[in-house]
Figure 1: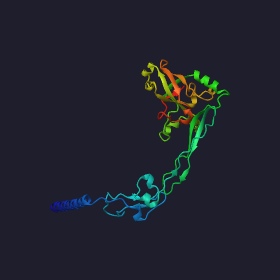
Figure 2: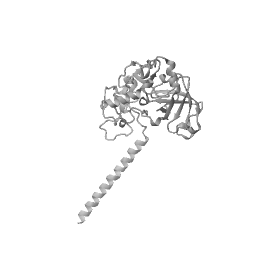
Figure 3: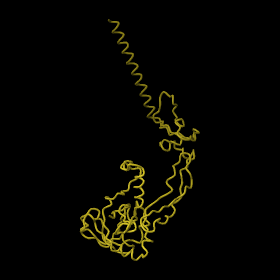
Figure 4: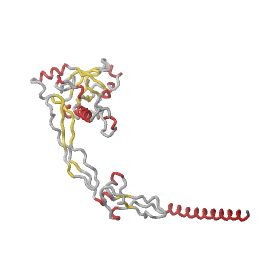
Length: 307
């Protein structure tokens, strides 16, 4: 029994001694870690590395991979094309490996509206000046389209066409009621789930492309508008941008929205949510053909829509 107790004590003493030694070694390692300057990231140039595609072996790391004690501050960096997307390139990767982003020219002028009477579309292009290489940024789109409203051939007698438009009253709703609420294409894929197939989604996209905007200068705003949301921001002498959505166009009007006015002439408008909110405005000269469907010249987005 005595021998058994003696062995246990001896064993316990050895264990305690080993733990104490380990603690002392740990303190020394911690002290070295604190007083040593931090490692800087590696260099592709010094390592002579420039790899294509994604290559996990194309790495710069000062601490040997089989080292017993690894300095946590020695962060590895890479010299392959994928490091640009993964954001783990060595600081000199772009310069050393000659990364070239895509470069494009400025946009060219907009084409003429492809419909001389009614809603149509315009497009403009730009060219690729330099292709991307060595993992550089890919090229952005080189074609843009926007909606437009052609009026040059609406009716054999243009004055007759304008007389009809002068008698129209624009019926308006806040843009929040519109079907063409603008959204970044990458914002949420669920926005397309309501379409049963790709053809329906494409048809909806083309309809939105045919939207156009018209800019007006307000000449009269009734007091009742001060109590209406959105309309309470309309002021005499102010400027408002109104969108004509494809679904609001009328074939018998040449594919345009009712009440979209006549350039340089005063016409009337009214709120559909409160008929006591109404007024007059002056359409600015033919700006509808110079404004894209997603933005208006007066604001980042249209405030109102035609109904």
